[in-house]
Length: 153
Image (spheres, helix red, strand yellow):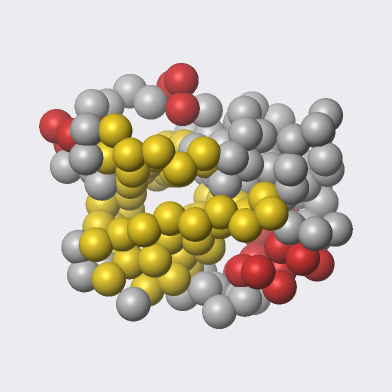
């Protein structure tokens, strides 16, 4: 079983509750609006990190971040991007099993057409009445499940 930690929209704030939840991850995916390179460094102390650039990620530190990352973890193909509206592939035709995005700050786990769409919400500063959330993918061979957890700051 592979545990992939999911986090997004930290906007420069990496909460201790998020770090505690992500501990034990084999890999971490950050879906953008990171806010500062130190966030990625801190996450990298837990597990290898793949991150994408969000619309608020600016500065020299963010120049090396792609807008979209495609990766395979175990037998599962994953597409990681910040804004789902910018998805420029047909995930089914591309063989993608999971699409992970952020941007909206609204947590979501939804399966459509055999593709699992996951938005881990926002783990950074609280926005409006939306919850502070992080998530995980559990990968077992070709099987994948997603879980979101509200962090209690």
